Length: 163
Image (cartoon, rainbow, N blue to C red; front, side, top):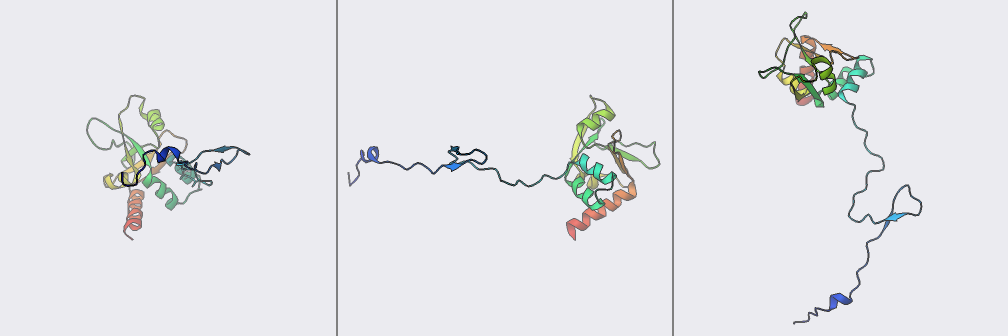
């Protein structure tokens, strides 16, 4: 058998992996071999869009802070039978209602309403020229961006993206 002994493995002893103490338990040890430990100091998560709206309307966020959160957040939009935004034309300028959560959308449009979800960055990309939008129309911290404000948000996004 060219130096191979099939019974040699039965006599070998393998060392156990080292055991590491678990944080929080004095004297307790568990086998954590192959398991990833959570970080001791996890990164804070960014505020939700609803929190950003609240902070912006109360002056705790700058427009730059708000726009960064808005661009990355999900926005809930009511929809009709055809693709596209539903606009309100009974205002000084046409605005499109948008919501920070499905709960806020349902408060405005009813529980059986149709909707679609996009990011704030996609809103800025797809919003028709001359339209503004209102976030959380029935919410405690409703915020309205007229067409000029939307243009400024688009310019800000372009500067951030392309320099």
